[in-house]
Image 1 (tube, rainbow, N blue to C red):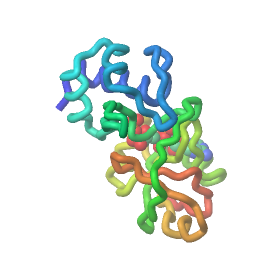
Image 2 (cartoon, rainbow, N blue to C red):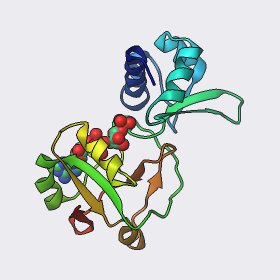
Image 3 (cartoon, rainbow, N blue to C red):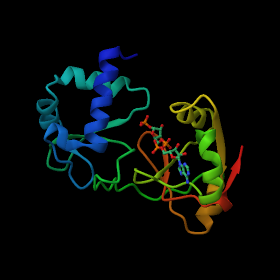
Length: 182
Ligand code: HQG
């Protein structure tokens, strides 16, 4: 488990790698990657501190990989802001028949009217199971509604789904016709 300081570092890493790389003076490449060496310098942290957060992050939010050029890079596996032009370049994946989305109850009426929208992010985020959807919704409210998303039907109608490296399902939008309250 991460200490409080490590959780704080994890949040700062999310901010820089998903939303505001410029606050650390960094640029993400087209696929969201930053050289690990540059990242350590920009955040003023050690390699050991980085490794600890990457390894023990509760949701595996960060991925480290060595490129064809031998340079080691880090990126956030999902959740980028639309204002950051990142293409995760994930392959399309056939989703399970049903996926789930947890949200504060106060959003339910609007969602049933206009569907799920990505809002400030690149994608709508969906969960593979109800328990995970509840956790996502509870970030914002104790009173959570879980929607079942007819992902299998959507896929047959041509909607594209991706799965992030840490298991979050991503799609562009979900219309009301494909939503039901769980
Ligand atoms: C809601 C976390 C009204 C939507 C999680 C959500 C996830 C609408 C909020 C990831 C709406 C957007 C993303 C509509 C969507 N009317 N409300 N038409 N359409 N909404 O944070 O899915 O911890 O962008 O229900 O685990 O909550 O950051 O999306 O409540 O994977 O790694 O608008 O963030 O991951 O909020 O969470 P978000 P989300 P991390």
